[in-house]
Amino acid sequence: MSEQNDDKPENDAQLAAKIKGSARQIWLAGLGAYTKAEEDTGRFFDRLVQEGEQLENRTRGVVEKQIKSVEDRVEGVRERATGTWDRLEHMFDERVSGALRRLGIHRRDEIDSLARRVEALEGELARLRKQAEDDEEE
Image (tube, rainbow, N blue to C red; front, side, top):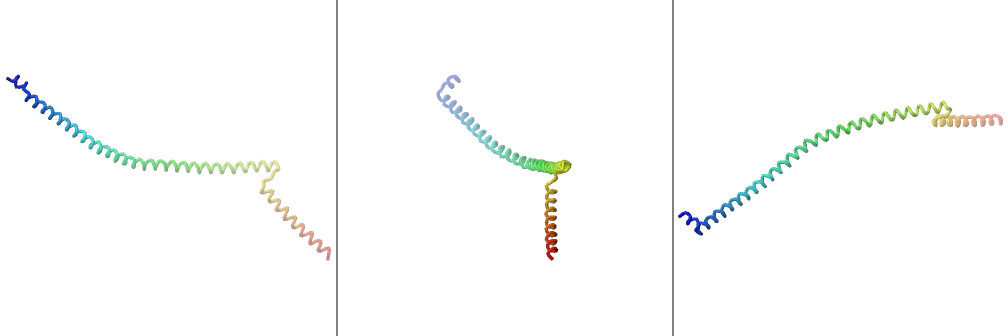
């Protein structure tokens, strides 16, 4: 009897309804899982963004300190290099001036000083000549 009961069209409709109901439940469970995953993914993404911002803020301070430290070191090296170049330039000037003096070539300031002295002597000589002429006329 059960074989006959199973072959009836009524059972086919019930079986189809059960399959349709199960398929619908599977479909709804899939939609629910998808929605849940989407919500969790959104929250997970937001949490990752927050953690990334926190990490960026922490590392920004460290990086800025490192940049400042490097800038300070570069400035110190630049100051030392400038001082060294200034001393080197001064020593070079002194040695070149000494070599030129030994060769009998005078520096510009020495020549200018001598030119001023010659002008002063010429002025004094002109004054004395005029005074001598005035004395002769008397």
